[in-house]
Image (cartoon, rainbow, N blue to C red; front, side, top):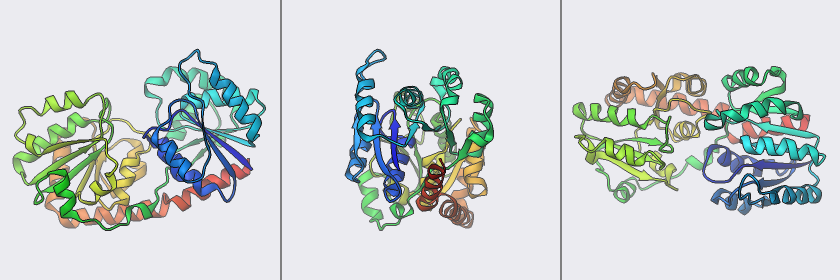
Length: 360
């Protein structure tokens, strides 16, 4: 069967990373092509290097009709049996234009909350009859989507994010890595990975770290990621006593290596889809602290310490507990790795995805 995967963009993000990992594993079962609506992100180039053809529609604005003509040429040439769409703009474009071009089996891979695009949910509901199957990452997301779209649960399948465990199994010169980051090599390392944007909770982590530092000064905070809130967050720590131990690392291509030199991973997010960052920490055998929201509880369960959102005091207490209790930290690491390898390995998730598409 021929499967066309349509995604809004191919910059760094959860959906984009999932596509990069998952589609090449399906090559033995399907002939795959990927189509990108806007931009030419680096993950698109990485996908092409695996041998998957990638086409670009190069959308320039809401009134640009050229992408429709490009998409028609692609569909006429490739003649896909199934169209799978990722992210809300691709979801709506794909089901409307794809069905008009004669594609009968359309799968919508819904990923996380729409957040600022929530107003598009009404169009999602109006066009739901064009979708053969929805896919969500978690049972919680399935419940939310069932209520939001008013569709039967049978129309929604749950397939989580995939983790390629081989990616996290490597040797590293720990001392050299710490030197390259210019951090105190004798300190314990707490790491947070995520875009610096509203809702990720970095401000609560910074306050928590300042509280922790007053009781436990032998620690670094490594923040990997960038975004609109960086100026605000750097201003927040201007008068912190822990300021010299807080390192804003920006966007990184070496997150796997940073995780390997870290003792604790923290994600203080207020809301989430299914966090790739948490999964990567679990696969990297780093103890995880994150917020007690339903999707995090479903993903990590008792393999992480879950704290209330917006609670710097509880966050500081959890970090201190793990820094002082090696046995607790090792126990969480073992549980997390067992859960990630038994439920979310790339092989397991790929088989679920292939089975679902074949059933259509």
